[in-house]
Length: 154
Ligand code: RB5
Image (cartoon, rainbow, N blue to C red; front, side):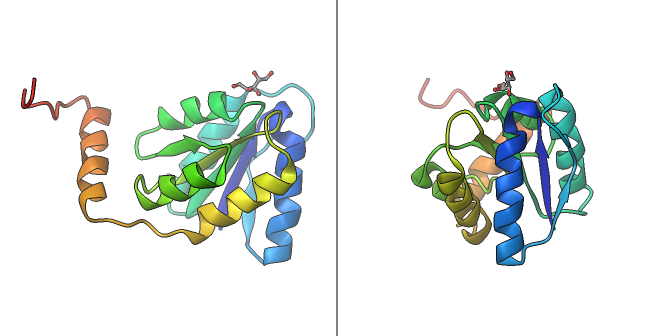
């Protein structure tokens, strides 16, 4: 199950992504918004990301105008690693290296053709693990208010 969310500026793109997921047979839950009426992206980010953290959904795909505001909101939620992507390379590597659990796309930045390909890459690319797990663990320490800076190489 994939969690979907958007504000008004990402709504149309999210609708296209839903059609694409339907064709692929991927199940999703849409946490809003449900029209092009003004809707704040942080609310959609909270609803979709909390479903990921609860284990109800395995990842989230979020859309706003740029993909940036909604990614900033998502990244404030502990345990969420959101990436605002506009191309195939960054989408592939945010899975391989960052184990991103939230893909953020801009409805005013990319069209549905590219967006749907990015969704496929995001869903189909595994995390590489290894040294990248250590770096993700470091992000989690920062997220919890800790420090990972030992002064090495200062
Ligand atoms: C809404 O106008 C727009 O600011 C929002 O969708 C997003 O692009 C913010 O980052």
